[in-house]
Length: 363
Image (cartoon, rainbow, N blue to C red; front, side):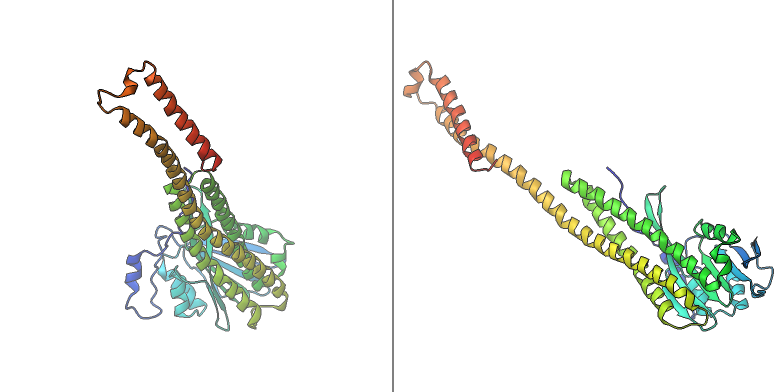
């Protein structure tokens, strides 16, 4: 039987959650499960005419030095080295609670404006083909004056298309500001949601086919797994509408007016994805009723066949029992054709009853 999607993985082991209990706010402890990922820093600087990108394992410079009109993108993946995250927070004067949220990958998607920078938390959703499972990862973004900082739990290929676009000399990213880069990072995360939603739709279609043809107990387990996955997806996707809405409606010196049209486009994408997810959730809940109805119909068919067989054998059992009695003076015993006649009567009863059931549309 085909394997269906499992619930989204919980990225926060309970033991690591307990380690933070009782500690003061702003205590920096990484609570994710990507412990094997070493921290790497990729610094990209560009403007309309020049482009430069370097990768480091340690902070070797003052990252806050940005020559105008350059835009600096600091991409950090691997959050296990707390000192690196702490140093970045010190250089850019980030609030300790922001650093704590970055190191705690169980945050709800949100947006906070601190005046001189904007902090956003998003969820990257993807389908792991090898493990046949959904998985998610927290992406933290910081937008400042002429710079953007992105934090990822591990080294993924998520932002590779953006690096390729930046390298194009006449590309739009090269001539726009840091707010446009901030938008592009959000946009590529949202685009992956369409792939995830499409996978959910495929699973729903496959389960529906099985429900119609031959539902099995494993089908019910698949429906419940899909139901839990849809709940987790909703937790990750729905709050992003609020994030984009804040970017559109709350004034900020870091967001230019020309970016509003792009933010509206993202909002429309999120709205479409949320609408599809809600429709799929309704279908999934309906599939539970469909499964129960299918099982009930199968049981009814089985009981109908058994009832018909039992009903047919009732008169046959009566005749067999009646003539099976050991009476010496039964008049039929002296007739040479008594046994064949009895067999013919029994067959005739079966045919008459089948005709009667057929006419009543019971079979």
